[in-house]
Image (cartoon, rainbow, N blue to C red):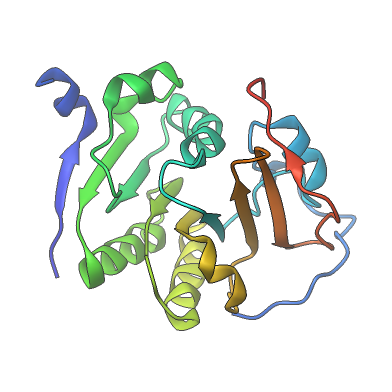
Length: 209
């Protein structure tokens, strides 16, 4: 399989099923992966993204605030000179917006791929051990595909983010975390989270993390 890899910096220049459990007392502090949003971090049992795992972000439509959710994390990682990969985004990334969000484009890679090629590329990037985070748009897939991504994230010790339509909420998922985005009111509804039970109420989104 093949996929075209595009440097965003160059573009700018050219214009398994799990059960909730209590957090272990000896959980290493360094595994914490904050989202960059205080309210969301406080609501999540692990204080942020589950490390070395797949997080599923469910959207009512593309462009519903998913980048604002992820940008603080991707900025933190790239500023720490860690590789972040975007696999098959629905729109061409706009480099100035990513830069304004604090993302270092030198550490950001865009993989142009669709369908099975995109899923293959996402899995390989997650499993490689060289990527801190991989963001992908797998579309309509079954839980077996998501399980492969979850296992790959564990193997590569990477943060995996799968952005899918909100209709997928009714289907089972092996992802360690599932968050459904809402626009009105703006917020995040935590459907499933590793380390404990999801909060009863949605987390209100704020423009100030």
